[in-house]
Length: 347
Image 1 (cartoon, rainbow, N blue to C red):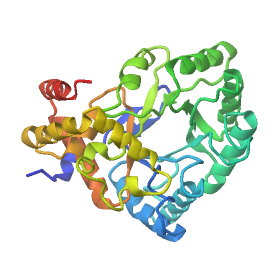
Image 2 (cartoon, rainbow, N blue to C red; image 1 turned 120 degrees about the horizontal axis):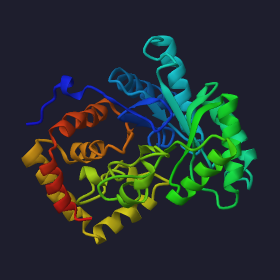
Image 3 (cartoon, rainbow, N blue to C red; image 1 turned 90 degrees about the vertical axis):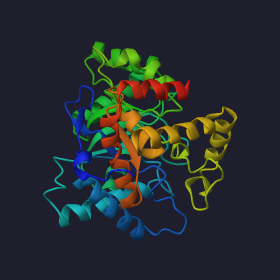
Image 4 (tube, rainbow, N blue to C red; image 1 turned 90 degrees about the horizontal axis):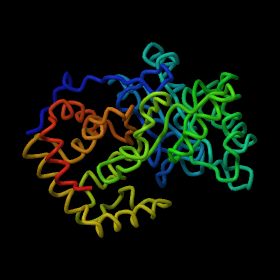
């Protein structure tokens, strides 16, 4: 029987790189959760977001992450989040005061036009303007370059992001899925020219995808870079929950329009023998830690001190409660447990 003691799930915070900001170790991500479900109206999305965000905030979560491309059409997720926060600030102004919450967005895929995407100075500025309007805020706390742009010089990107930070439209900037070489190039351009360096990265990280966070970025966690991380897909798009072990459930993310690529991802994991590993891990989680596979997967990420925060995709309060309990599981995990889990993963 799993324990459900709220006192064991007390939120704690980690410093996000050199920003000086403290971020809850679990945070709220909007990718593939709001503004994309078939038949869901804007008002229904706002109400669903408010219910989950309110509970998340009361549990200590302080980072709410979005991107200009999230939702269907792109930007719908930012509109839902912006309206939800605006209403929550009126209903509960103390807990939702702007000085205590962190709002982030990402710029790269803004539209179908040739100049509505990428990291040109034009699109960075216009993309952020659109995001701020949809989010109903004057500034974001964290602004990400959602992908590297092979067509825009790094110096142009660094100068554009510097102008935005110094104008007050963002408090700090970072990257998402950039290579370590691209991050260090941008960092030293900034340092040598008196500009604002990237201070955090948003990579995919989970039990089945480890190399970049654990190996490639390893030199960037120390001086002088002090790179912070806001990791996404800690459950490998649901694969690490075990719900796809035998079939694809109706109504799951893999059945939604626009996410067909996740089916290919699932097939790849099957070929690599990862489903067998998940079955073994689920048995280990139940027998040794008294928890579900999903809680173990999240707790495993929490145990990595170089993970500043874990982005959760939450659409139901019950789902949030399940995810929050990973904090108590993380407290139980010993070095011996980690070694035994490593032997199962073998990756």
